[in-house]
Image 1 (cartoon, rainbow, N blue to C red):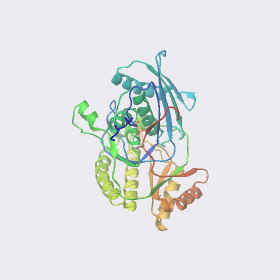
Image 2 (image 1 turned 45 degrees about the vertical axis):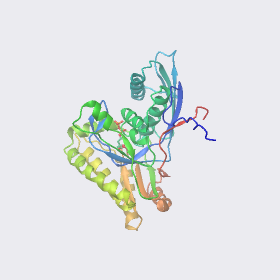
Image 3 (image 1 turned 90 degrees about the horizontal axis):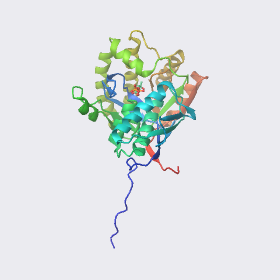
Image 4 (image 1 turned 90 degrees about the vertical axis):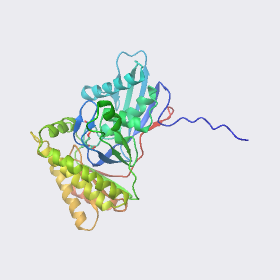
Amino acid sequence: MLREPQATVPPLARDTATAATAVAHPNIALIKYWGKRDERLILPWTDSLSMTLDVFPTTTRVRLDPEAAHDEVTLNGEPATGEAHRRVGAFLELVRERSGLSQRAVVDTRNTVPTGAGLASSASGFAALAVAAAAAYGLGLDATGLSRLARRGSGSASRSVFGGFAVWHAGPADAAATQADLGSYAEPVPTADLDPALVVAVVNAGPKAVSSREAMRRTVDTSPLYRPWADSSRDDLADMRAALGRGDLEAVGEIAERNALGMHATMLAARPAVRYLSPATVTVLDRVVRLRRDGVPAYATMDAGPNVKVLCRRADAARVADAVREAVPDGTVLVAGPGPGARLLNEDG
Ligand code: DP6
């Protein structure tokens, strides 16, 4: 006898749940996002491409509280203050506008990555918040919708909605706001078998002196190198897609490294200059060059902080990690692989 198909709950779209918990992982861009053309909608000038990691997850619970007069946000057990509180509040306001619900929320976030140290805590943070808040407020979004929503919290979060490699489309540059917003989301990138690892060298886990938001703005507004980098980044993306498609890790690494160094060059040329790279960063970069000379394909990328992520084959990861540890004995070095996309957890865990 034929049976009725069981009603299934799509993992990323539920009816209003009152409370929902989501987990998301950070991603590291191999083609960088640097520079917004619209600050309010968080629309970038260029497409970017990243690998979501299997380390440093953020877990976020959002619970609607009909009694509360304000959103209550806790970050690792401490009440969030200042900019962090403001950004989460503004994000929840956006979710409320879309849901038609006015209830405030209690948000509890657990980050396992140092916050604000250029290790993409805002990517995992806003991806987890987007997935949990969309479920709690019953937005019923698919993965593309969640990626657009996460983007409004932090641009790079749009990519953490997906696992593995993801590309974030800048969206049409000359379109009206609604069309531009609709066109700017991330999606998975097809890749051949790469078996990649990212060796993460945390040389300084402290918060950065200049936020990436401010540094990006300053670069776009004042750096004479910004335009040339943005133009070359478009070519880098095309080359990167081709390299991923044929599983050419050496080409992937070379393109990622040149794209990241170019991004840092744009910041160094900003007025006043933004310099995230420290002496320890350069020590790791030198070590990576030596590894290559010794025949180990290893390539560096850096974000808005001094920490270095070294792309290599998984089979070489232990050797690369040892070399980096030796170069920066005071740092923390760990090996990450491609990780999963953001997802809801059952409320019972
Ligand atoms: C250097 O996504 O943190 O890590 O959109 O202003 O929140 P906002 O910026 P954010 O910037 C990340 C910049 C980067 C490069 C990247 O991840 O692509």
